[in-house]
Length: 367
Image (tube, rainbow, N blue to C red; front, side, top):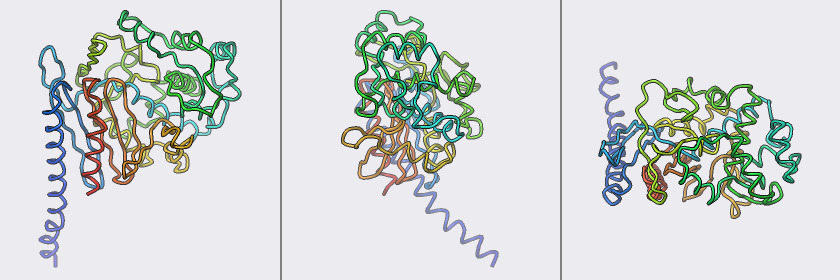
């Protein structure tokens, strides 16, 4: 009997391994073909985390530096810009899970006295704006990011922005856009206020608190940090260069503070980004199932907004929870495959590659 089992076990495992290898080969073929057709994307990083298929696969094509022609390494980190928002949202949900705050709680007493005064003077009723409104971009708060903001950054690329300066700019630009809870309007200011809440509730710098709240150490997320606020983690490769030809930008030449305090700011590699989404939606970070479900539940009717609490919820013939970032990053988790695909494209003008590759890989996993 023992000999029979020894012989039978490999016969069971071999087709599973063959299928995993076949899928990984198809991922690489897909990535190579997309890059061949879009070499002006500079470089593309991909990670697929699919535990049910036994797959944890990372790859890269192209260059990490257009000027030196340095080859892109698959483990190089990038600035993920607005892909920071799911991390902030999950941190807030952890504070809710710990019963430190509530989703329906008005933000008035959660903000600093200085921030409260600024918003109240500008006509905002902070007793009506809740934590959930900030998370879902339904607060009605005017954002500080507009064309003039980008023009200033173009002309002053090394300007060191302070969070207080960006909040002040929100107040100076205009009055409330809409009543709380009535309209989706994507605005980084919502997430700057959320990191202020994290900082006040934990009594730690928000970036330090987030590492603890999100269980980075326990979940082996080792190469993720807020660029400019924290030291680069040990054994982490240099950031890849990211480009926006429209602004003639190389990320190395722009002070990261322009997009740093919660609306953006995180630097990470594709594997860490995928692992974060995978662990999050598997319930390893926010363990309360009903609370986690709210993260991907529509706040407004879905025809008005597919944004939930820190992620977009799409249906592509399968369910997908997604967020993208300005520089050209995208991360997608599908509960239908229990898999996450992270795609980082180094040329902003080519960021449509991200959802294309993400959706194509998820379809391969569905077969």
